Structures are given as structure tokens and as C-alpha cells.
Image (tube, rainbow, N blue to C red; front, side, top):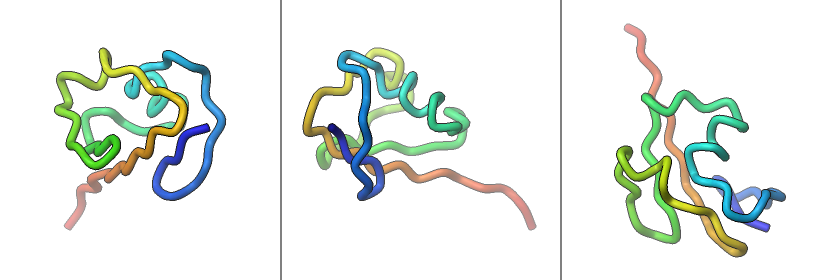
Length: 65
């Protein structure tokens, strides 16, 4: 079990953060991610694996005027 933005979520072990976010419908070009209190650079989302107990905070940027 992991937490994403405060909500517990089932996940497949060894899923990358990028895969998880894509499954959740996020646009990876428009997000900032913190994992266990540390910012994950966008270039590392596709290589950073999720593990049981991880806490992710995801901020999605929205354009407009």
C-alpha cells in the first residue's frame, strides 16, 4: 500500500512513479512529485520504483488565463 496525496492506494510492486502516475491519468509533463519528503526530478520519474509504504505528493500544473 502507498499513499498518493493522502489517500491509500494499492499498487503493483516495482512500478515506477511514471507508470503509476500514467495509470492515474496524470500528464507527466505537467506534474511535480515528492516521494517520502524528497522532490523527484522529472527526468527520474521513469526510473524511480515505488515500494510499500511510500508517500507521494503530486502537484499537477494547470494552464489558463
